[in-house]
Image (cartoon, rainbow, N blue to C red):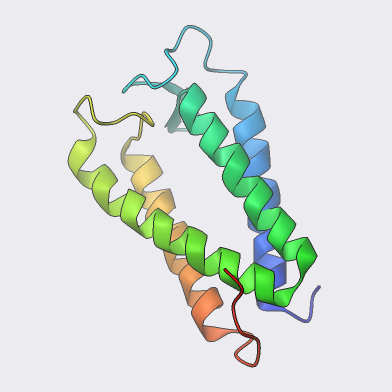
Length: 133
């Protein structure tokens, strides 16, 4: 696994997002499922829907990282692209009812940074391997 940057990044990010998704359940008591304002987890706002998204992203990245280089590369590119879109959209919906993930400024920065890293590694590393989406 350490011979593939895509697999390593997928596994590490997968574990981190799974942990964040699990820890989020300890702070969201009393928050509506898709409420636009959540509760803080280490400075990042979460609601139950946001926790579920973190768990699904974590499972996808971890599963792909364990499955192999092509799967990890594909997952990194796909999740990176989605996070890029979420990060950009998040900039415009912070104070609106459309903010169903209870995003805040810190979330947007993290999503954009995650997108850049996932896309950067996915598109530039393991070039001999074709991404499997």
